[in-house]
Length: 349
Image (cartoon, rainbow, N blue to C red; front, side):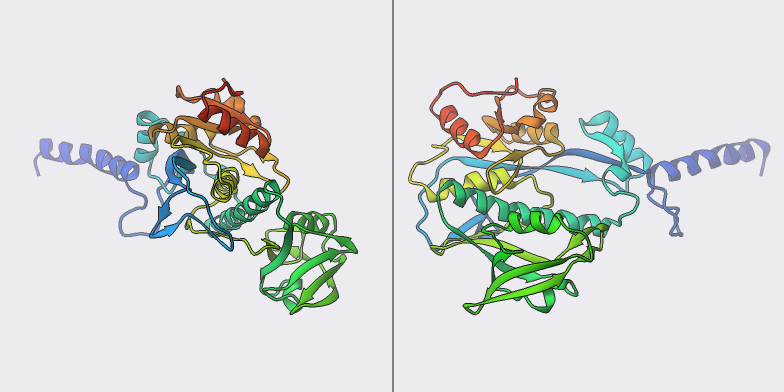
């Protein structure tokens, strides 16, 4: 090998190595990871909760007649990317409006990705249940707490079964899952709790010793999954899969209300939104609001419902659509009606 060729070969080696490090997620031929400890958050897909998904209604209601709806109600999401090589992280930082955050902001150091995904699924299921409760409360329906499942090896698994109804906790009458959860959280692992319930129509009482939550040993766990059911037989089912987090609550609630009331809430308009929902109608803040507004704007939304606590960040979104400020479910319903009618609404702008 002559000197020039040798110089060229030796000069190319660092270039090849650098290119490999920048563009690959692992060293070829090994399991050694080359990804950066960063995540990119950006606009995710939107879903019309008044529409269909995979041949099913996104929100399906049995046990009561549903009224015709027009328009589009968008549930918004945030897309999260990680396990990125340096080149992809740089590309998303330079070429998109993504937010680059430390990886442990998405996957805490003491959690696995599987644990985070499972927690997000639980939060999403909880948001569905809260949406049903909030909507039926808004519509004046009487509710009962029904056991939908129990966590294997948790205290509740010994005595409670799907279909049981929970009526009392430590002698206090309860009508929503959130009441049960609050009373459980007021205790410590190792404390006992008295649950009144009906099984096959017969009343029972049982004492349970609360366990420690496997994800946080300072938090008590009863281990019962609950849903609120209407005394007049209304059953709400949500058919979106592989979505996580609690932020769909407000939009799901509005969808149930729209389907169960004669008035066409949207009247052909396209509204998007986000926010957690409590059974009493309180609307709570969420993460990634700017990315959700970006996604809704790109999808053609005419207005976006923003939890009041997110208004400061929402104002920084690149959009011209009204960002309607909401504190409670009543605010959201009244504001949507006003917007559709062409009347003034309270906004974050």
